[in-house]
Length: 197
Image (cartoon, rainbow, N blue to C red):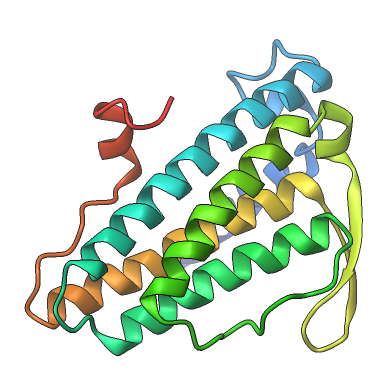
């Protein structure tokens, strides 16, 4: 490693450390430096509701595409079933309920359609009832290996959206590789088309 690249690496590490050390200070993250923590939580809750509206729309787009294929790719069906099962599992954890399905269930597309419709209503009800205080609170749960964890609800909710988007990306790539036209589920597309508010 050259002296210049070592200095660049050290500068980058110092920058990361400075951000990590100041992560709890609102002034570290403009444009939120003018907000109180309560105001920031309100904005977070509103934005999570928007992201879940997007999630429902994007999952429905993927499902409708797959329903329109004579023989959808089997991996895509498996990934969609996993998305829906994982979303239900996280909702059950948030509500302190028992797990309904395995993480990788064997759903046919008809059951995926039923699950997607049910989950859309369940997540909407959950998020509509969520308070700012509740969003910042922690929930205790066990993972599928039986390990205990405690996570903030806002972090779980963000995980649900990101996890689903990750697997929808796999589905889109799988549909394209099978020679079909996949759905266009980009978040920015949904926003530009006023499909989420």
